[in-house]
Image 1 (cartoon, rainbow, N blue to C red):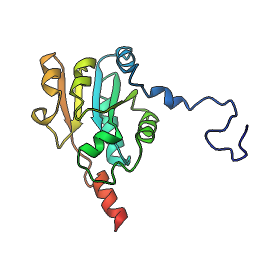
Image 2: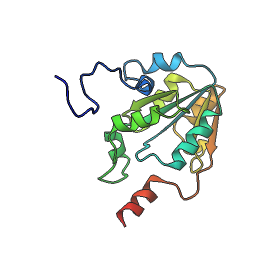
Image 3: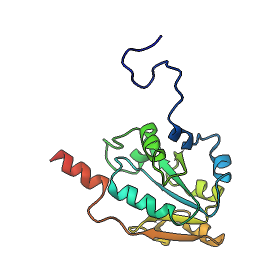
Length: 172
């Protein structure tokens, strides 16, 4: 049955948006990562409400290699991070889709663990990237990447751009 609204979910036979092909399932994550060109850049985060700071950071990360993988915390893992009872604002599927639509991003993968360390070990990135508020000493997986001959890069934060600050401003 066809909907007359013309919205997503219609049975019009249209294929899904091309960016959705950049979202890996748990089952195919490692195969998809292995097929990407090297040097491989890896980063992770919540990416709850995408803002200029995020896209600036992701663009800078992508320029460090031939492909960028972004690992995204599941909704449950975000709640375990203690970011607040009302976080994430956007559900995992929506966060994955928005990130996948960015040209800087080659593959988006969800992870439910408290840290991405196991995923980092499994995909062996050449470059592990975090924001400037992190260091190799405070980043899970950095030791493993460096020991394997890769490097850790902290990208300076975009001043006055954070999801927490944006949510505070919205609530005022």
